Amino acid sequence: MRRIFSTFAYSDAPRDGCWWDETETRPDWPEARGDLRADVAVIGGGFTGLSAALHLAEAGVSVAVLDAEYPGWGASGRNGGFCCLGGSFMEGSGLTARYGAEQAQVFRAAEVAAVDLVAGLLARLGIDADTHSRGETQMAHSRRAMDRLRRAAQDKPGAVLTEAADLAAQGMAGPFHGALTVPVGFGLNPRKYVLGLARAAAQAGADLYQKSPAGRIEKIAGGHRIALPQGSLTAETVLICTNGYSSEDVPGWLAGRYMPAQSTVLVTRPLSDDELAAQGWTSDQMAYDTRNLLHYFRLMPDRRFLFGMRGGMMSSPRAEAAARARTRRDFERMFPAWRTVESPYMWSGMVCMAANLVPFAGPVPGTTGMFAGLAYHGNGVAMGSYSGRLLADLAQGRTPELPYPEPMQRPMRRFPLGRARRALMPPLYAAMALGDL
Ligand SMILES: Cc1cc2nc3c(=O)[nH]c(=O)nc-3n(C[C@H](O)[C@H](O)[C@H](O)COP(=O)(O)OP(=O)(O)OC[C@H]3O[C@@H](n4cnc5c(N)ncnc54)[C@H](O)[C@@H]3O)c2cc1C
Image 1: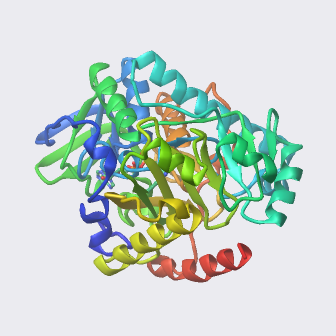
Image 2 (image 1 turned 180 degrees about the horizontal axis):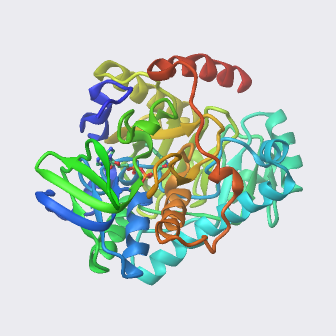
């Protein structure tokens, strides 16, 4: 696999210290050996690939899931657990300006359907994923940002504004100028969700493989042959579900079309009632701030506090240490009463962006029987699961029943600069940070 970050990014080191790993033991899946066959081969065992595999297996299709490490190793097993609206890097107004009001509406319907899909899967599959929070709350980091939230509230059905003076009474005290709560979404333990999906897919008949990196994909009569370290997998249809861990050559079409970016998370030890009261944050609402380079945070049911942020365009032991130090610094600035509270768990992982700032779920141009789903712009708990569901329909030659926004069907464009495209990000992030002042 030819990838655009250093090998450090794709090693276990960034995920070292992940709290979720402590919360449930993962199954040991077999490695793919010999010459295997399936109707559908899924490359990547995260929310996207596992949701596709589950829905295909439930429809009676034979499906094999390959993961280079193990199902849930990627972002799906190490994210912030915000099952929320999102997926595009653009707000509703941006989507309307670029794609028209009707498609912006369809995208909005897909975002809501994605959250409903996850809620439905948790209930139907009996996955206890420690859910909490009634929707999601966006905290204004400045007065101007609060003015924007007031305007945005008018277009968001069911949204509730909280003025700065009322935040403390709601257990959301802090350096905030007010907040906007939308009633859609909830927090979850992503490891419990992703392992639950994996087990359900296997129970429905899917074959899951770990330590089985897909190599060259060769077009053959009636399908594709995927090279594996210890054999091959032949399938009529291939689904590419590798998101931030994608490579330039699996398949070659992806080259230059996806942009991985890092996100870092910390989790504290459980906080006492006195500590919670001292900071004035007692709400179990999941929350994020209005910054472009946003922070996201939530008090979990076990009273540990999770705090994460975007950023970091380099990947090396030094860059990882710096990203972790920045995350801790921002946590202490925003929640100063917890300055001495330890955060024994800290880790990072890769999200993925597209040049048109919208997720993609659709056919890979120029290759019959190959589809891809990726680029959720850091919001893939719901949208990745949803994209997997769309891919399952497409793999069966069906038009998806669920809302399928036209912008998500547009083939991903290439970023400028090819393999050096990461160089585009530091100036972009610098501009975004300036906008946050
Ligand atoms: C720190 C962090 C916090 C986040 N917080 C949130 C959040 O709170 N809410 C939210 O909605 N989203 C969040 N996200 C984003 C979300 O986790 C991702 O969008 C989502 O998990 C993507 O799922 P996926 O299945 O598409 O990809 P991944 O879960 O990344 O899985 C891709 C898999 O592909 C495998 N792979 C790659 N190449 C090959 C190959 N050639 N052969 C076989 N396997 C291969 C990898 O091993 C990997 O397991 C966060 C991400 C990170 C990193």
